[in-house]
Image 1 (cartoon, helix red, strand yellow):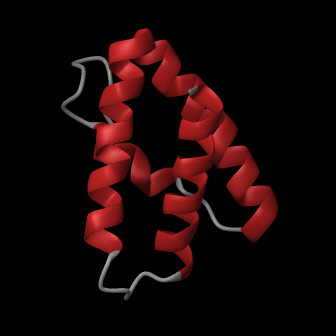
Image 2 (cartoon, helix red, strand yellow):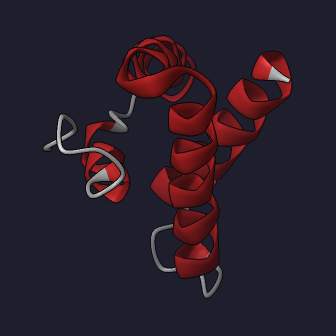
Image 3 (spheres, one colour):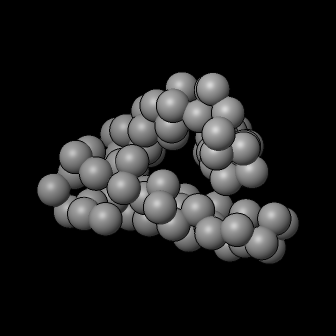
Length: 83
């Protein structure tokens, strides 16, 4: 499951970064938020941190863009997650 979620997050964030004006960006951001909730439910804030770290590194390497702004999509899932 972790590998599939990681790949899905990379695809979603990459699409949003490369196509910010696309009509489906809001839908993709909603899915990013849902995945954050799934990660939290499965492994808490540590799982969220670990996933985002790996995803950020990979996206920066592959498309030279920073997905850091998407961290805020997970705000509200836990009191510990404040970005």
